Image (cartoon, rainbow, N blue to C red; front, side, top):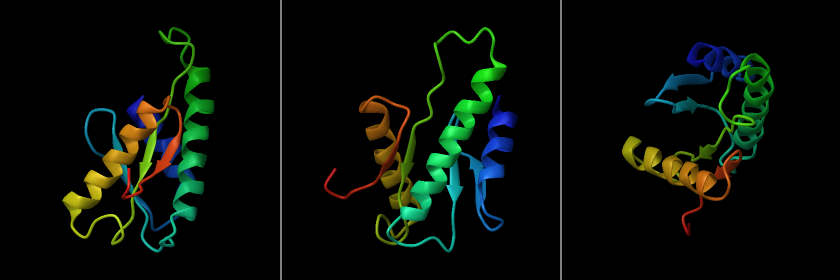
Length: 113
């Protein structure tokens, strides 16, 4: 599954974007040259989420759940973190907000959250 996920995700990205595995079932996508308002990152994240769901659900005949969910958190440098640790923490908080609010969605980090 991880290879399928990487292949699907890579197909949604621009040539200069980077995807990396970041834990068990977590991945990080670095998107240099993306606007600070995160609109472009949100569009790409939603495209990734929708493509993964459409591609992987059809392949799993014995998946134990009705469908898979893809939750995504978005944070941007330097607004949401000036160090790698701060940026990861912000993206992680957005990811957990996506999971806590029903999963299967993309959430943009906001400092007041």
